[in-house]
Picture 1 (cartoon, rainbow, N blue to C red):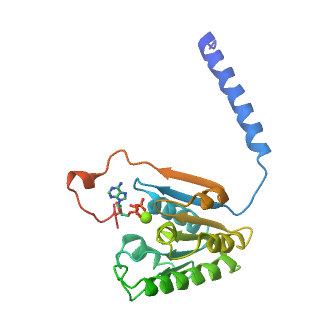
Picture 2 (picture 1 turned 60 degrees about the vertical axis):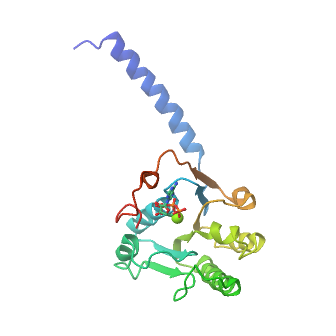
Picture 3 (picture 1 turned 90 degrees about the vertical axis):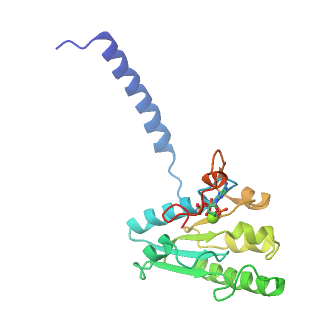
Length: 202
Ligand code: ATP
Ligand code: MG
C-alpha cells in the first residue's frame, strides 16, 4: 500500500530525532560514581532514594544505608530489605536512643558514630550504592561540620554512587554534587488532615 504523505513526513521526522539522540547518547561515554542529592520541602526524597536501592538490588549489587534521623522502627522498606541480608546493610543513627532528646552532646556523638558507619561503607570494596538518608538534617542542626562530611564524600571509592537526602541541603553540598533534585510541594494530604499511612509514608 502506498504510504501517505503525512505518514512519510512523520517517519522521516522520527528518524531525524532518533539520529540526533543516538549521536547525543553515543557521546556520553563517561562513567563515574555519582553524588546525588534529593532535597526540597516536597515529599519523595527518601522514597526516590529507595527507588535507586530497588534498581541496584535488581542488578544483584550491594547497597549500604545509613539513616541519620531515627524514625519509625518498622517501615515497609526496612521489612522488605531485611529479606536481602547478603545485599543490604542498614544502620540507624542513635539506635536505642531517641531523636527527641534534649541532650545535644549525645546527639552529636550519635551523628559522629553514624558518619563513621558511612565512612566505612564509602571505602568498602563491594557496595554499588550508599544512601545517607536525612544527612542534610544533621548538617542543618550543626551536629557535623559540612566540610568534614564533604571530605568523607570526596574520599569515597571513585565508582561508588552516593545519595544524600533531606531538606535544606547546604549550598556546599549542592556545589559538590553531580545530580541535585529539589522536591517541590504542590499538594500534600497532611494539609487536609490525613495522617501517615502504610505504604505511603512508611
Ligand atoms: P518520603 O520519606 O515520604 O519520601 P521525604 O523524605 O521527602 O518523604 P521528609 O522531609 O524526610 O520527606 O519527611 C518524611 C515524612 O514527612 C514523611 O512521612 C512524609 O510524608 C512527610 N512529608 C514529606 N513532605 C511533606 C510535606 N510537604 N508536608 C507534610 N508532610 C510531608
Ligand atoms: Mg526523608
